Image (cartoon, rainbow, N blue to C red; front, side, top):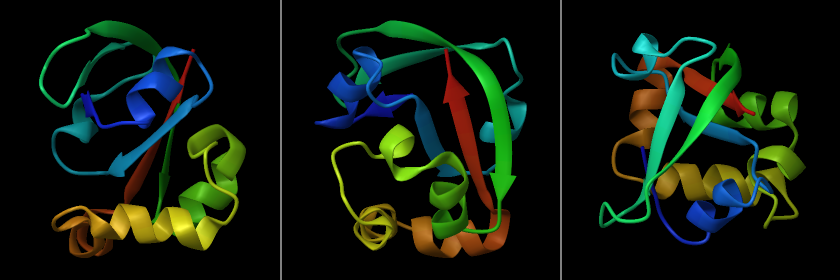
Length: 107
């Protein structure tokens, strides 16, 4: 799973312990106990984190409220700012409406 700055460093240092993604077919393959391979967007800097819990929500706002902003986007102060970031990714806003949103709790 590729992560951009600053999220790569936040996940790697355990400051971000919830990764939120669109619940597409690829994410539906995930199970508790699986180890996710994380990399920087260029594919470098591999590390793994096991999945502790999975939770499906209808949208990013609900997912962020359930997981808490501190665990999912610790570099931000407002849920609305985090939602704006997720919606800035190509097709994320539309795909979230279509598939839902997955919160991946990491160990």
